[in-house]
Image 1 (tube, helix red, strand yellow):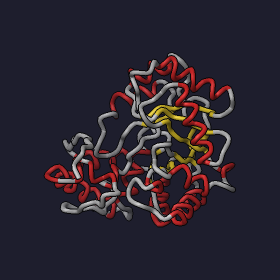
Image 2: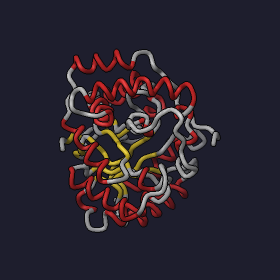
Image 3: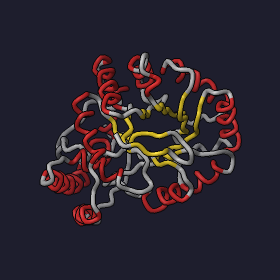
Image 4: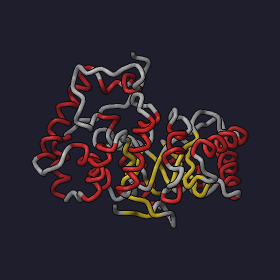
Length: 309
């Protein structure tokens, strides 16, 4: 699989990153053996970049099992979740992650979201000390605005940024992606398939079980979902006319952006790995990207998760 350098003088990583949120149970329960088989299929396909987080339910411990004899093959990324960015909590969190993952270092340790109550100077200071101790190799951020990213950069090197970015939700495109590109920060977008909106599976009227977090999102119900479904159906038809499918299109489209290093894609079985991996070799032309823009049109939904159940 094609590889790119992550940020300034960072490690080489494949253009598709294995997103481990689903194998932790974020999209419904997944059998452990199936999860391990999925991770192994990803590694065999060349997806040797894996992203998880302490907040992804059982994801880290499942990865620990899957990587017990293959840790050396992987650029492993995890995230500090929750709203406590005190150094005490950071140290507890990293030790928990190291134990669950069965490793003595994390390649890329990321702040899952900004927490304004904790001074960035102190947070970055704690991360830099972990780096000096060899427990982490690079520092990354997730869901940070350009201003928040710039503040973090003033206290230490930021290797990567993980914004939400896909064909449907593009609010970070003009500012965040450009800022990262201009400052040699690797971009590894999450929600590339928009939690399944770009998966070609769900239709208006479909519901999710209580153990699937997607039941909480506004864009999977009502008129908004109908509008999105109309666009994604046309995108799927466009992809099939070229011998592809909407999943491969969604991934290839993200990879085509010049600021993007690697697209994080969640998968929970080997068949999905096989499907997604084919997107790595699909290079969309300028004219094809223009055609896609015409199909998407002025669809600009907002991302909202609430207590709806």
